[in-house]
Amino acid sequence: MEVSFYLRKELINKKGYVPIRMHIAFNGQLLKKSIKGLSIKPDHWQEKRMRIRQNRKNEEYNYSVEYNEILQQLEDKIADIKRYALLNKIALTKDFIIEKLEQKQKIHIEHDFIETFQEFIDSEKLVVAPNTTKARVTAINFLKNFIEDTSCQIILDNVNMSFFEVFRDYCYGKKEIGNNYFAKIISILKRFMSWAEERGYHKNQQYVKFKAPEEEIEVIFLSAKELMTLYNYDFKVDRLKKVRDFYCFGCFTGLRFSDIKNLKSSNVFDDCIKINVKKTREIDHIIPLNKYSYEILDKYKGTIYEPLPIISSQKLNTYIKECCKEAGFDTPTTISRYSGNKRIDVTIPKYQLITSHTARKTFATVSLVLGMSERFVKSVTGHKGDSSFNRYVKIANEEIKKQMENTWDKL
Image 1 (cartoon, rainbow, N blue to C red):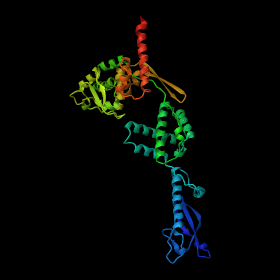
Image 2 (cartoon, rainbow, N blue to C red; image 1 turned 135 degrees about the vertical axis):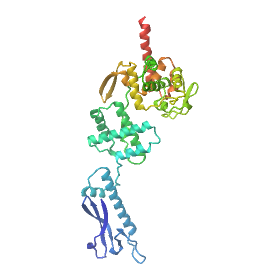
Image 3 (tube, rainbow, N blue to C red; image 1 turned 180 degrees about the horizontal axis):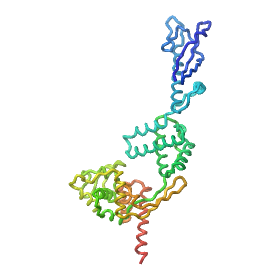
Image 4 (cartoon, one colour; image 1 turned 45 degrees about the horizontal axis):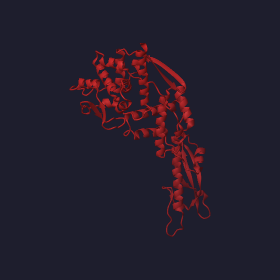
């Protein structure tokens, strides 16, 4: 789509002035449009520049400044129309171009949704946690699939309640994703929209109304008995021994996978560990060592694995299931998830539910069951709020009640 300006010399008037006409070439077509109010003497026109030259001292003022400004505005508007059509995948027609040219208000240039989302991810990649970036990449890929599957073009200014309802129905109806996964995508989408709004990419605030609350799910953990069974189990394969030790160390300390993986010998002291927590960025967080966590560290002291063997999260999640299966943790366990209002129950052996995340949950729950104060457990795990931590308190109380029923109630 190109624009050029020409003199209509055949329409010269009695005073020797000729009008200027705009030519817009697009898709093999040519749109000719007269420019109202602009007429000049032919010898004032600079054909190569397609602008009006300044009048000479002995000449009457020719309005070159004002007229050239109008021509520039028209050229800029054509560029805006071209970009608007490209970003919104609108086919150019003469009627569309004329409509936009005659539009008095400034054309609002839409930023391509996916390109802008990628810009958002890239711009914060160095200042957010790697898992945050990973979640955002997952979200943008899901949105790309939504666009491809539904042929629904997402525009920043149209991310409104109508879009939310269509997207929600797609997530629950076609993809059958869980409510918590949907809530995560919406949370990331709202953060992106806020980021884009701050940069002036849109003025749409409808996204603020989006609501997708997360639902409480089961806390999967190893009981004290299961934990000690796993800890003392005699695995014949060295690979499983190392995975067991890595996982159990998380159960005995409450450390996240990322912090255990980054643990250095310099973090280990006689009776505690002192680390800078990766996720919360807490400095010099202290975790007391108990008998079992100390034994694991002592096992690898002076070896090439000191302080602990390193393993990727993917391999840990695969191998720890293998460990727990061999240790006999095959109790049928039912988990319930909702996709919209549809409840989905799945019953599988417990070992299939054990992941790196369950180690930290095991520490919190077992510690409370064994009588450790809530305040101390929170100080070790680093939980700041009560909402997530209270789940462990609830589970611990249920475990204590179960133990009571299995002991005193049988007398």
